Length: 90
Image 1 (cartoon, rainbow, N blue to C red):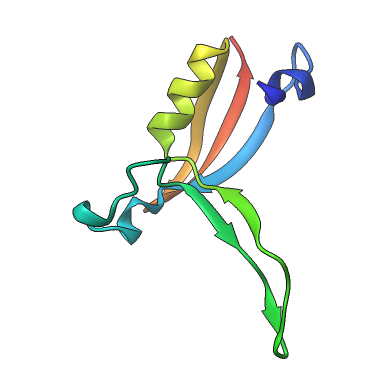
Image 2: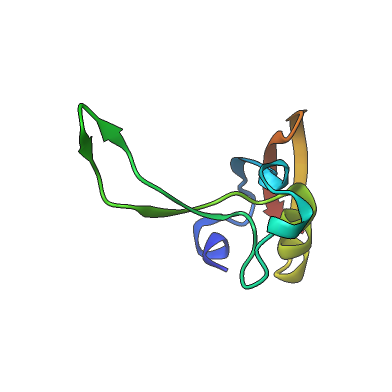
């Protein structure tokens, strides 16, 4: 829903993501949350930063979520599990 507040009436948002399903075997898939919800932290020279949330969204889920709030998600480039999407108002 936050995307709607960022998007001008004739504007577009370009977003890249990937489907991280390949990281899991079937029994390991998370059941309590979406498998694309990850936590990351950076580390350099033995200094580690705090963890932060990151979301990887598969293409089907992106399209479905966009449709539900009146947006269109079009895939403009795809390479294996990675993609670039163009999000616009319907």
